[in-house]
Image (cartoon, rainbow, N blue to C red; front, side):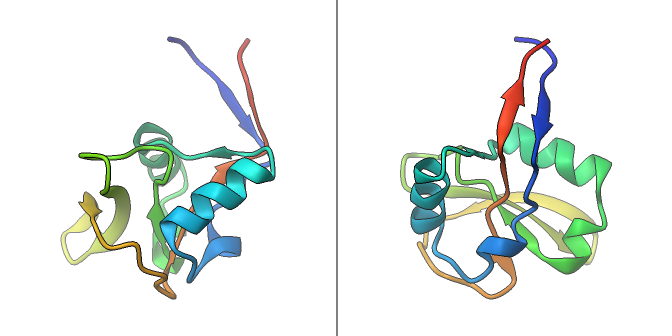
Length: 103
């Protein structure tokens, strides 16, 4: 509904090669905030270098209940997509924030 500030951001490196379903549950149990599609797009726009290192599983958003949105770098540039396999992939990780502050 308005601007927010994400603090204690972890860009997904700590969750590389972890299934999206497992990442989502770990983030919840840690009391952190998983990235939605919108937060992933903003992160990629502000910090595009993250996509040179790894791709982002946006596990707080779902598409048709079993698909996970993702942001990755392809030959044409950044691309937003989704996939339906709950796979642990070495170059994919789920980012999260420690808190979300609303001014």
